[in-house]
Image (cartoon, rainbow, N blue to C red):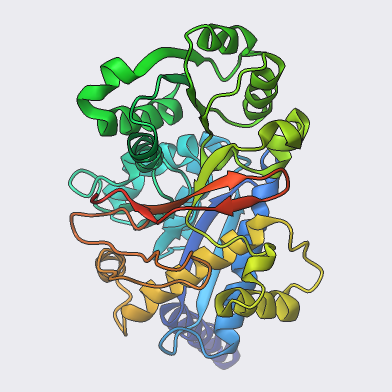
Length: 394
């Protein structure tokens, strides 16, 4: 009997120690596609896992260690729901961080807000994530598609005020957000400047008829709100028709070299996109302190990684941002304070943001990234040009 009491006492003590250590941890949850067609994005989470290991090795955040739990949702909304519920209800995470995708995050948007769990730095450019009035626990982690549309329209108004504009947009929220920001910025001039519009379904095999229709309008500016294979089809289709629009825009999300190559890189020369981040493999940043810091981290902690893959720098950048928010929490890691600090960032500089671009948020402004710089493809690389353009003011 005495032995049993000792055993029970030991179990209870061990349980108390475990509970105490859990209380000393900052528990962070995440869902990402580690399997399925978008599994390449899993590198973002793997980088963050290693980044938080480094933070813990250096003493943690204000003396507390990070427990980072990142789970596979295969980019499937039902799986996202299942994994998020597990993270919140079983793992008792303090916040969700950097989960990828519009449909996947949408599936847990109401649930997390009802539970008052921070849904921080959502990896999707949909405008809906920045709605502090109706969803005060959700904050985006990307410049919104709407903001990007605004910035392209500002460039058109400044450099080609007599433009005849054609728009091709994917027929979903992604396409509609871009076009809404673009048109709103053109204002009253939109009616006369936009001479043709076409859309396509994401399930469509080809967009060749839409490209021919837009060329026939006589437009000299083309805004293609396209994704994935449709980027390649658009660039190649425009070249095959010998159409040479003076300004030809594609979204940042379509600007990967892997989308340009199937169209022929020579056909993408002159293409305009935008960015707020340094391209870490571009020689122009070789001596930049922030890029050197990133490479030092990669060399020490992930020495076999392919540094041409931008998912590593993306993972690093967002993990760095989150540590800034958590550090600002001092010793109060309640969900309320984590959210309060995320909404109180002031001109925060991050090592991989372009010079002059900072992160600012407020209780009524949940958009951390509202500045972008235009860049043009030269056949090999994207080259930044012009001043930083801000969605917040002219």
